[in-house]
Image 1: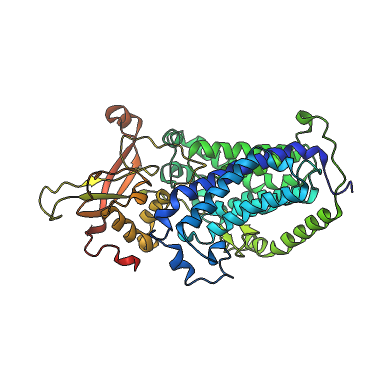
Image 2: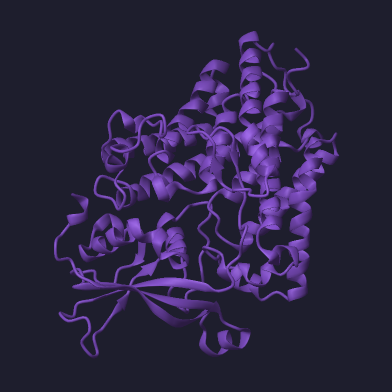
Length: 477
């Protein structure tokens, strides 16, 4: 079945599979290390409470059968081990059917996590990982040549990621159309990286060139993925370079990394790879399975395509609970100012007393301390830090989990404090906690030289009034 495989793409498949294994590993590690405080039995948004009101058809997950923190930890750490095995190439040592099962297990495990993750797992890269992870099951291993249809489906995902992001920008904020969005984006993005200050301080004409180049990469180049080589490889390489630029400028979990992996799968590596290895004949059952999956994706693509063509395009949406074919996009609108929620505590018996000493909690990723340069965390995902950015934009968005978060600070809850960089009350919990809203901006070159501060902040208003723990753990009952 020569039409079914493309042996020359064996290295592209190998590179993609190993890159996907790395992303899986990071995703499962992120889940294992953060879930107890976020969605555990005593978490801010407990899984058992969620499952009590959400049926299986809306959230298919292994945890519908039973949930415990121990079981969740077992699922997450099993995912870590399987990802490490896939990264090490274990799938290449197995028969084709066993390799496919090995790739299917982390998909099932991560689907189970995402479908109970609630707000903490509402990001587009969760659906992207699940969609790509599902397709990876059908890429085969060293026994067979890479299936043409599976390679095409990966390009179809890459096309929707890039083209969807381009369309949502052009239909959304005016600054994308007048090429000025990068005047603000590097400063106001959810989690700046260590180079974001420098990106923000680039000359404005260069920012306009960046936006124009982004439009070309997202609105024109994706169509070239479906042209003959070497044009398709050139288009994919350009997309990968653009994503690397984004990786340098901020922290977007594994969104950019997974997009790079998709782009690498579309590159013809034959000049570097040389002659492909000798593959065995392709089993009929495998052909039938891949053709069936392709037909399934084609049918499921109807709603995402309709969404792409709609003037009311929505981004980062799953149209089925299995996250098989999704819509993508990012930054349809850009914030012009950055507002940050700063959380503080005090041991004073009367918080309103004159001279009451309030001490600030430190977060790992989000801006806080003015002299602290942002760190690089991506592809690791700091979920609390990301939602703190959304809290600054919309207090209503944060209401379900922000109160429980403060209550855990009043208890010096160990799992919650592990999500933070600095706890100002290591010996005993505070009497009161509060949250205040500040406007943050990057300092100028002169301010940086004079003060050593990367950020400047101005008080805006109270975000959450001083709160004490009158009835411990009341909200969990």
